[in-house]
Length: 432
Ligand code: ACO
Image (cartoon, rainbow, N blue to C red):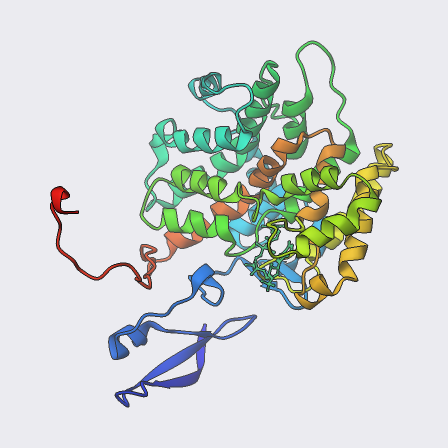
């Protein structure tokens, strides 16, 4: 990180000036260091929704929202999607480099040896009603993990951090599958360490003890691709939540649980579930104009789910890849004439030619198509965001590690623009 440009801010009333340095990243816009403002001028900055604020320095993921570029540790996501695997990408995100054969084997071995969860943790699910949303179950069970794996919770010990990272990536599919089996009332299927990561995940979801379960290679491949595409996305809401919670020095499982909670919302990871609900509500192509009229009506709170993004003002590169994969996967699974996909394609085409969406630079995001693939794989709608959480765990863990290992880390503590009452005296209840 170099400092090349300097800016001067002058207080028009007092004439006092502050010199601010612009920090130059390896890619992307310069970032103004505002630290002197409070000291020199006595003012804070105001940036609701962090529209313009870089809250940390990071070396993990880069997005160019105007060009539709997404890089994990410098590697374009489309190359990783074509050539890599989810576990290799997880290694890349955590350790910063692609592994060689020995490193990848060791990493896979370690992950596949940590897949079981403590039996007591498994009994937690019985406390949930069968129709509890799986995100509620997953978030609660992850929060409880600190109570079970407290042998390696020293966040200042790099080996403890590594064990946590491996445990989290290894156990999240088991935790998710247990939530799914609980909702069905089916027996829990234990992990199989002889299977690759994504195959094991599907096996835990769909196998039953009473008959042989055949894993469809195209399903494993499609899910692995979705996991790669959702693995990280720099300082999004859930990752920022993990960082903020983790910055207090709390145990890392609590921080990841907070991330799951943030991901759940429909403006973030919950969008994949909302897209399917929206497509089902629209029903047929004839109803698209009526639905889009509601989306454009400012009195109506309806949004075109799976469209728009805080950073991408061009095509989300992940959406492009998923859109292409959708056709291939559905055809190979024998569900080529999928009416929801036809409806989504038509909706996308109409929206992309509509001035409302064009003028606001609203394009399909990663979740416009992901739900269609998840449904084709037999994953129910309320599990979509859980699948996203499994993938994003790799990114959350990488960001938490990066933050804790940084000797300059500070507790995250934003300021505010206070607009409440000025100081006043307590009035006795009789006089109010
Ligand atoms: N449908 C209709 N209008 C939209 C949409 C949408 N999906 N997204 C943005 N807009 C409009 C807003 O109404 C606003 O219009 P205005 O200028 O006339 O007031 C303008 O576009 C800017 O929108 P903001 O909400 O200010 O943009 P922001 O960057 O804060 O929000 C967000 C981004 C939350 C993703 C938004 O586009 C959205 O709600 N999309 C739908 C939900 C979704 O798909 N989320 C998944 C995001 S990807 C992910 O997290 C994995």
